[in-house]
Length: 303
Image (cartoon, rainbow, N blue to C red; front, side, top):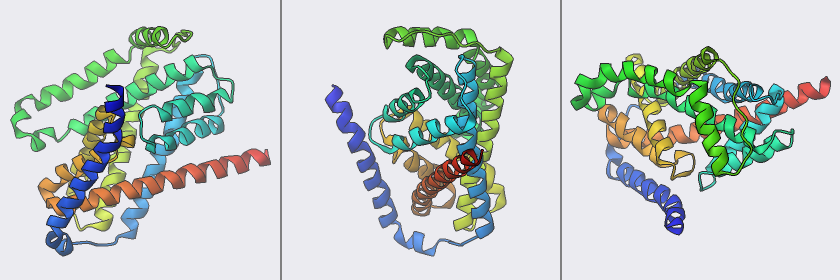
């Protein structure tokens, strides 16, 4: 069974990449005739907004880690998170977590603390993504229209319950036992956890806007489509996150984004944009990661 799962992790991205390429090929005339454009202002704004996402996440993880009794400087937290995140492109779902455990240990953070804080960060990040992901769900799936407003009310309530320190400590304790690691409780107020959730929700709105601005930067789309595109990207991220098969949601996230956007701009064009967005976000992540490491290392050496 484990062997089959490993094969799927390699096979699924390849199959989806073939599917995306086939859709683009079959709709090549549509792709050629699409209103492609180059808007440096929108692309520059997209690049700047992605910086919020890539810089803030290390800060959030470091903040949660501090409430487990292990304090790192922002420079150290940035190195741990950003370097570890690059390993998620390696097939397999564990490498970014293994890398984070190893890198954090270099600063004296024990394995159980890194596992617990990463669990907390991932849970809050996922819960924060659900509101923008489902905001336009009734347009994507009209059959859910009658339940849409109810879902948008239930999700924040469920999120506040899920991020209660007592609930998170319960799951962290069970995970620690399963992994045979020492258990260390999270010492943080519920209101503070809610604040982290709100910050990550804002981060999702900004990051989704960055993705939407890329689309507008390469394709003539109206400004009014920006919120829908941002929501489509958040929903595609959620699907890729749940699948946990392809590295960094590769293929799954891109195919889902193409399918969602294809309802409005044509499937061939949408799949082409989805591939371009994947390349764009990968390049911006590398730029912010290595730029941040250089900048923070340079300032540290001056100190």
